[in-house]
Structures are given as C-alpha cells and as structure tokens.
Image 1: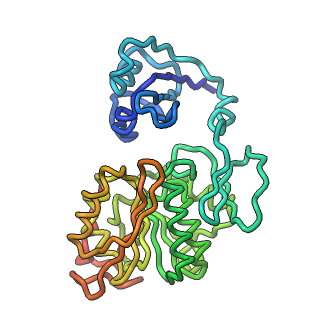
Image 2: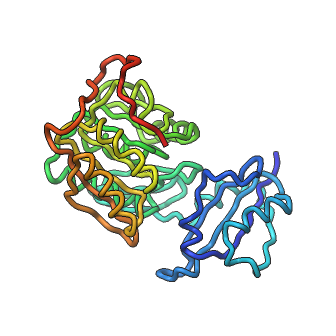
Length: 323
C-alpha cells in the first residue's frame, strides 16, 4: 500500500476562497485540497494543504503553488504521511459542533452528547459537509429555526448533499416526509450511503426514507419525478446557485421554502437577485462569519407549469438544468 504525501503552503483568504476543488490541475490522480484559517480574522494568515497519493512530482508541486501566489518566496517541501496515520490525521482538530438542536461529532470524539440534542456521527472525508464549516452549521441552525417556527414539510431535497448531513437533519425534523439527496460527485453519494448506515437513516423512496441520485443540478429522472418540493436545501457555491435559479425555482412548490448557502456575504445580493427574478421572496438569513444562510419562499400561483410529484419522467419533462 502506497503512502500519502502532504504539501503545506501559506496563503491568503482570497486565494483560499478562489480555489475550486474541481479545478483540473493537470495532475493524475488529482490531490485533495484543503484550506483553513490560521489566525482568526486575519485575511493574510491562511493555509493550503494538498494531499497526494504518492510522492508529488516537481510539476505537481508547481501546479499547487500556482494556487497560492503569495507563497512564491516560501519553501515548499512535501512530507510523507504513512497510510496508517491518515485516518487519525483527518480527524485531528475536528471538535464536535453544536448547531441548533444538532450535535455533530466524529467517531474519534470522546465528548458527551448534551441532553436534548440529536447527534450525528459524520467523519472527515472527501465529501463536503461535516458540520465544521460555517455554511453547514448555518443550514443546520436554519432548519432548526424553520421547524420551531411551525413549518410543515412533506417533500424535501438536499441538492449537493455532500456527506448527507443536511438531508439527515431535515429528515429528523420532518420524519414523515419524502426526502431526496443529490450530488454531482458519485463519491459524495457513496459517502452519504455510509453515513446513513452509521446514523440509522434508511435509504429508500418511501416516506421517512432518503432517496439518492448522482446528478448535475436537478437533471435526473428521479429528481424530476419527485418534484415539486416544499423544501429545497442547496449548500453549494454562489456561481452554481445563480445558474440553477430557474430550475430550482421550477422544482419548488408554490409557497415552498428554499434554504441557500455556500456563498459569501459579498455574493448574497447577486444570489438573491437571481431568485427574486424567479418569484422568490427573501424572508431571513443566519450569518456566521462571512457566510450567510438565506431563507426564501416561492410566491404562490407564480410562473411556469411545474412537475407532478412521482409522475413518470417523459421526454417532455421540465429541464431542471445543471452545474
């Protein structure tokens, strides 16, 4: 079994936010990229870590260095990480997260679950959504707030489900709903299945179960057939959120609730404008640091014809788009 290698570089927050894990760096296999804040509220003190399967070549190091131009004068030396230490490394520093009525932890955590909170065990993985990022925590808090406010949900979808955490949380809050999780990355769907087994969530297409699909946006027969949704959660990125606005609005039932995250505060006006054009009204937000979670509602009796829940897909089915 080969060893993993890690390259660590200083970077700025702007550089970290510009990194797209899906970018093609011309490296095969591509490295796993992770960024983190070193000094709180210091935009110049961030860190980029690249994990490689095998010792990276000089070209691979150069490609990663190009992502952080501010580190040009800093020495970059990859370090070898034995495979048997990878799991321990990936769990290091992941303290349990409390968000609303939820308590998110890893298997390595020895923390006691606080009374009255519902626990989810979510391990660090290649999929996004362990609860430790502000966008995921903000969504958990928003879902909890919606439930406390009396929202009734019969049919929900988590677009860009990542680890499955937000879909699991929504299904816990509305246990008799139809639930669907989708992601463009097949690895995320595999991780969601694993996490579902760990957390006692049943995968299936009945009420109280979670159906899964690998799909770009909502372009999948299952996702089209199960529309319209009265709750849509989309924690992805600002660009895809804007591009998907027409298809998400079409898939949302009149009067339905939309929860958006994965955007920065500076990007919120553009994202909101895209959804206002589709007949959605902003009703509130939860902001953690620079990351807002937005709540919107679709006007009743608005817009285009919508799909019928569980109707069989046809060639004339609505085009829900992709990213």
